[in-house]
Amino acid sequence: MEKIRVRFAPSPTGALHIGGIRTALYDYLFAKKNGGDFVLRIEDTDTSRYVEGAEDYILNALEWCGIIPDESPIKGGPYGPYRQSERRQIYDKYTQQILDSGNAYVAFDTPEELETLRKNHENKGEVFSYNYRTRKHLRNSLSLPEKEVKSLIEKKTPYVIRFKVPVDQTIHIRDWVREDFSVNTSMLDDKVLVKNDGMPTYHFAHVVDDHEMKISHVIRGEEWLPSLGLHLLLYEAMGWNPPEFAHLPLILKPEGKGKLSKRDGDRLGFPVFPLTFTDPTTGSVSEGYREKGYYPEAFTNFLVVLGWTPEGKEILSRQEMIEEFDLRKVHKSGARFSKKKALWYNQEYLQQKKDEELLVEFKKIPEVESGGYSDVSLLRIISLMKPRAVFVKDLYVQGSFFFRAPDRYDEKSAKKAWGENSSDLLKDLLSLLPQTSPLCPEKIKTLLHSVVERHKTEPGKIMMPLRLALVGELKGPDVPDIITIIGLERTLERIRHALERIRVH
Ligand code: GLU
Image (cartoon, rainbow, N blue to C red):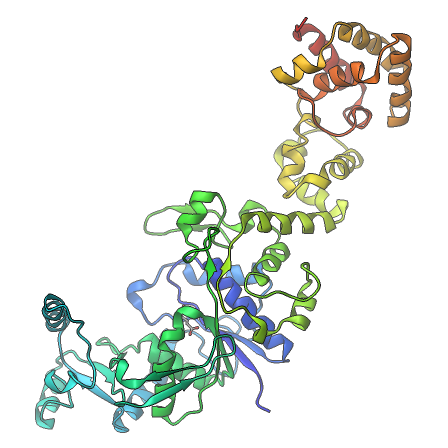
């Protein structure tokens, strides 16, 4: 059996949408599952859409996601170059071949002429198509005398090369994901294969490349499905066997209708790009999953289930993804994006991290670094704050009281927490706490208990005002844990401060 070879072929026209990353992931998983190669090819023949920095962005995004190509513009490989702009000679050779075979022709119609035709048709309520019906009335090598064609070319008249679509044939289309269907060739137009700058269009270039690079399976977004008939005709015209095809469903808006766009992300507060991207022309910055604090493993796990449901479990290591991925089971219909699910995945992966690993990231937060805590105390904070954290920054945001004394007391909490005997209870604690050494949750609990007993009151009467004094509101982990971590000095200071400031009764 021929070796499985799959390619991801993005165009460097801007940031890579998460749909593109999912395509790359499915390409990669299918290749690896079958012991095959995963190839990255940069499709940059359309110079008008080229965006500076976009290729680097693609490379960095794939690397961050751990989708590592076996062959690429950087790594090279036996079928290079892997950038279409460097493959001109190869395309030239095959352009000559398709012209010689009579399956393509030279067309001199100017963009203005074609625009006028389009407009005229539109005015009559019709759609202009350059096809088997119209081609003989237009200015091309099929309609003009050979001598004139030669002379026009000699005079360097700009021309394009068009595909001569055969008339009234049925193309049977088989796809790994979508239902089989048929297309009648008379529905297709004579697509441009080579532009007037001599560069091939996507349609021609990718067929040549997939053939030359021995690609066995083309797995790509479903926006290319309508062009598949044309692509199969091109293979036939070149005398090549086509690869297998699988067209992946779209990632849909959270509401379910239409393709997920950057505007949806802006509107609902989530990124649609893997890494932050700065548009070089507008300067506008779009935040990425990486910069938001997502783990690449969580991000790719979230993506892999958008369009494919693994059996049994939702959390999959990369190895499990490779083993279980089934291209035949990719869904036919679009997958709805869910921000909640993205967050859930990150939370799950964060919970699986060892506290020591989180410590390294936690200490990168400037307020944490300068907080004056030992690693032992920071590890205590991590283990207390971890269960509800989605991102590492949540460990700080939700536990900021460890690093800063409250500068205000939540009014509602104060009303609820501060009773008539609160001051007395806290004053008692102020004098007793310094005698409790060393501070540990057990000893603090015993002390609090004894104060409650002495005042013949209930535990809540001291716990709530104390929590308010330490945190500023009625949330956070157990009070004895907080006291143990922030230490005696900070505790006393916060209690004194609260006694001075809180006046509810
Ligand atoms: N360059 C095309 C794109 O970016 C690739 C389509 C394909 O995979 O054939 O959409």
